[in-house]
Amino acid sequence: MIIDKLIERIKATGNPTVVGLDPRLNYIPNFITEKYFTKYGNTPKAAAKSMYKFNKCIIDAVFDIVPAVKPQIAMYERYGIEGLKAYDKTCKYAKSKGLIVIGDIKRSDIASTAEAYSDGHIGKVDINGSVYDSFAQDFITLNPYLGSDSITPFLKDCEAYEKGLFVLAKTSNPNSGEIQDLMAEGTPIYEKVGALIEKWGESTIGQYGFSSVGAVVGATHPEQAKRLREVMPHTFFLVPGYGAQGGKAEDLAVCFNEEGLGAIVNSSRGIIAAHMKEEYKSCYADERNFAQAARQACIDMKNDLRRCI
Image 1 (cartoon, rainbow, N blue to C red):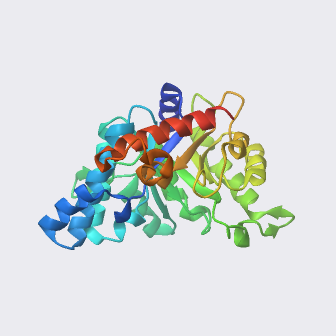
Image 2: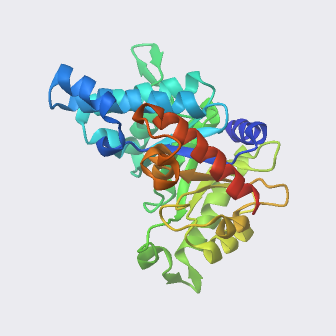
């Protein structure tokens, strides 16, 4: 089960941190961007080349101390085909370094369209008898608000190809409650979705008691997270919202079980843009040390989480 591999990586590193590879051009040091903009001009290709080089340096600096990375596909899609090439290369390079890759794609659709998304992201495509993988992802994120028939094709590929999902349950954004907190038959919608996610994962429970069908549960909503942990005892949480969005380590303890398992916590700009933060600037003043700042941010996050888990 892919969930067991993720948990084993977490145990091996002692670190329930996932690094969000969500690069923006203003995060990338000038010595990288200048090289590619000089060569390719002010083009999507130059932007994408810069992003991949940046990601590669970050991965090289952190692969031995974190279990996983989570590239957000929108940050790459904005640059069209060139951006998707950078996304693809980023996923493959992270896999080559032994990292679990969580593709943050948040897809949602039904019938043949959902099948196509699943084929492309966690399944395989058959082209006249020749079978290919598309993106090198172990997990992907999904939006469940079209109902079970939008999830079923992905569940089939999870079982067939040892892949996993993180399905949105209670997200970290401030306005998530406009829909997710609405009451339906006396129960919040996020809780009903959580119960569905727990059910969807019943056939993929691994040796640690967790399913390969996980849930996205925001760090900024600790009370809801506590309730979802009760509703979803076999569901592993992907927790966004730590750090820059206001989530604190103290808020996250409810996501974990007594063994300190049950969740992986995302940080994106708090790690990949650490070199821009005042607390790291004095130690990593040379922009060429940006990846070492990211490494130290991972260590600091690990220590912060561990004091509360």
